[in-house]
Image (cartoon, rainbow, N blue to C red; front, side, top):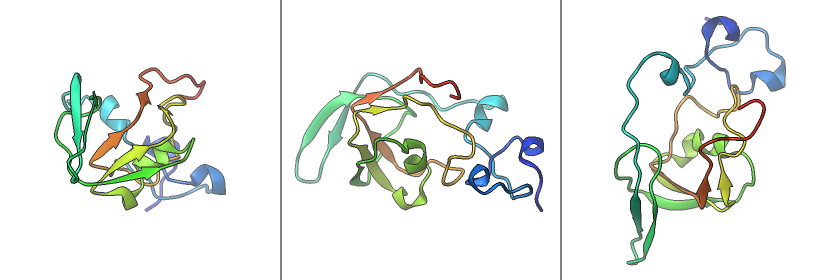
Length: 136
């Protein structure tokens, strides 16, 4: 069943690009903020990335609290972090962004690859907490 995006309060990946008037909709990641649901505790403070070869890398935690284990992979894109985070091909992996600034333009409706965040962990040099874009 297809319903208009505006009526659903959700998103459809790619709908803006293809000018589709009716399409399936999916729950948006931001819907959790609007529905009154409790959010996961937020991690903060020092964290450690341990690699199989014995490497130890220290940094600061952000995002949901927990321990993530998976294959360490990277993406070199300067843009598209929202698409990378919602791309099912990164399921079960720890995603490293090589571009040093992540989060600067926020997240936009209709730009996700799926309705979930797939990596088990994310490594960035600098995560922006307050995006600086008119649409974010």
